[in-house]
Image 1 (cartoon, rainbow, N blue to C red):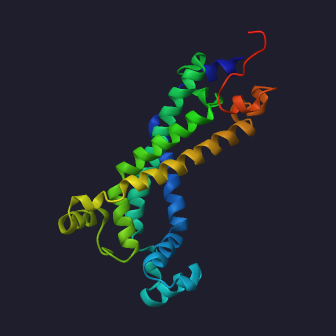
Image 2 (image 1 turned 135 degrees about the horizontal axis):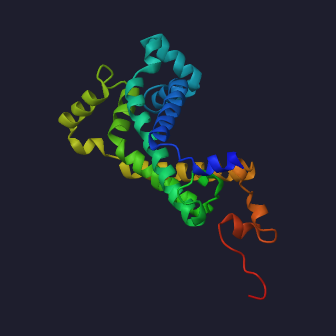
Image 3 (image 1 turned 180 degrees about the horizontal axis):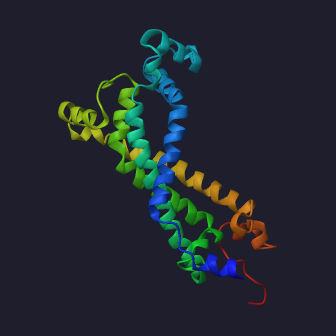
Length: 232
């Protein structure tokens, strides 16, 4: 009983922890997969497609040295850190609001993660969070792509942004932002939907899987709808 009282009186984790967790997670993944990102960009603009990923990486190392596999890494981290931090912070804030509406009795409590949110709402929140973060960090994304292709390699992120704005105009830093937003919205909405469904199926924090929330109507329950009861 004392443990339950202490758990109910504890406050939710501060928002800076969500920002830090998102930033560090994105940083770790980016460093681990960065050579593959370089290979993808080089195959699109320079390397022979017939070489494949490993052949392209070997060609880059042979012609430019091993450090070329991490060309633009600083710019990538400068974009990934705020992108993941903003995305997860926005998603956490919006999901908390949605969970509060789903279960007002838990308002302000740290166990809101135990409340399932309807799939359409999760998809909308994920898309909005991704678009917000991607649009905020898009100039850095432009620099990252250009440095992967071998341009502005000797410049830092901010210096490269200034150089592009001076030589090509400020509009060059936002070219393609709409298409990028569509791509990010779709990928993030699907990612968060499957993440939330996995949390439900695995019964994390006492959640119930969709089929357990309604014995006869699993699909409406999955969508967050209340099935009609006969006789009402």
